[in-house]
Image (tube, rainbow, N blue to C red; front, top):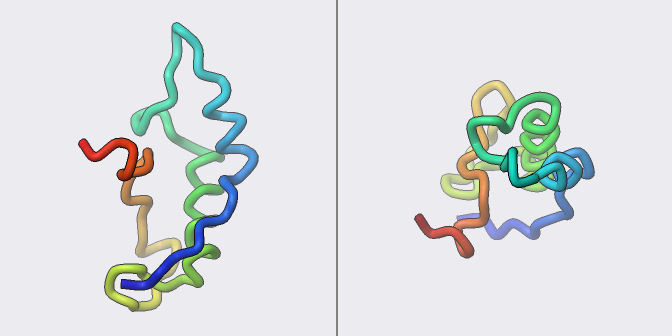
Length: 76
């Protein structure tokens, strides 16, 4: 497994999450463009376009964001 040094989240993702209110909560179902594309692109750059699990090269068209919240804080 490849060690990934995590970078800062894209500014657009931070701003999107800050819109949370009592009427609206950010979640996987409403995580869409442009924030989702920017997070995906950021992850690919962060990982050097290498899958951290198997070590194979990956591209945007053949990869996906695996989870929305840090699994260390949200194991479910």
